[in-house]
Image (cartoon, rainbow, N blue to C red; front, side, top):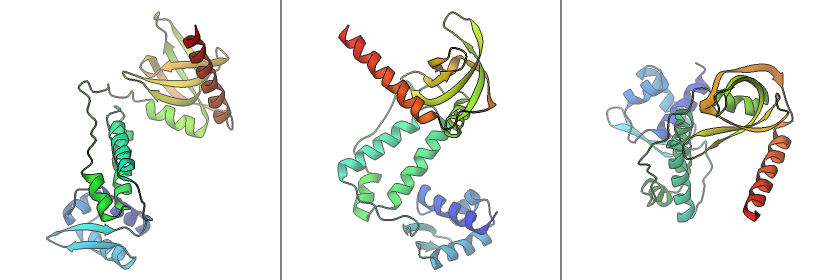
Length: 234
C-alpha cells in the first residue's frame, strides 16, 4: 500500500475509533505491522497533526491538519448527529459505515467545546422495528446512478408478473419499510418507481445515459410534485 494511502487510513482510524486507541488496534485497522504504525504516527506528527499519547497508553488525535476548523451552532450539531444517526438505521450497511466515518470527520474539525456537544448530543434516534436489510443490489443501483449507466433486471409487479427491464436509475428513496428506485424505464418509455425488493438478476448494462440523469431526475420530481398537488386538490 502506498505510504500516502496508509497515512490517510491512519488519520481516518484516529478520527473514528474511541480514543485513546491502542497501537495494536490502529495497526489492525490500517493493516500494517506495529512498527510501521509507529513510523506513520511519527510522520503524521511531523506533518502537523497533534496526536497525544505513546506506546502502551494509546493515541488521541487532538488536532487534525487535514480538515479545516468548522463552526456550528448547538442546534446545528444536534441536527447533524440526529441525521447521521438516522442513516445508520437505514438498513444499508455501506451507508451506515459512511455515516459513522462522516460524523467522526466532522467532530474532528470542531473546537473542543463544540466537540463535547456533538459527542454528548441531546437528540437520539431509535427504531423499535428496525428497517429490513437493504437488498444487495442497492449499491449497484447507487453506483449506476452516479455513473449514469443503464441497468438490466427482472421485475415482479404486484400481480406477480415478471418482466425484463432496462432502466436508467436516477436515485433511491428510503421509505418507512422499503427502498424504491426512481428511474426512467426503457420498456415503458416513461418514469417509474421500482421497489428494490421486487428486483432480481440486477446487473449493469453496456449503455450510458450521460449526461441525462440530472435533467431527468428534475423532471421526474417535478411530475411527482404536480401529482401530489393535484391529489391534495382532488
